[in-house]
Length: 100
Image (cartoon, rainbow, N blue to C red; front, side, top):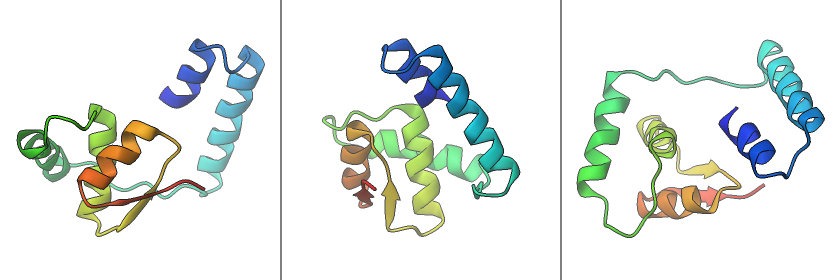
């Protein structure tokens, strides 16, 4: 939802586009399109440790960190993203960013 709202806020989407994306996302979720992985204390603690060891140059937002650490925790080798800061941070953590 944050990505959808950013597109609206930055003027890339109209209010109608925004609401349509929310409806589609909700419908996809209800129909089981998305697989949600648990967010637990292990993931949160590992995310905090990432910041303690991450070089100064990657720009890593907290939500991206949770996303990437969850991928690492579940033994994923790549992530799908359209976000360049998340791609750079993924590479810094040893994950291959894939733009579909």
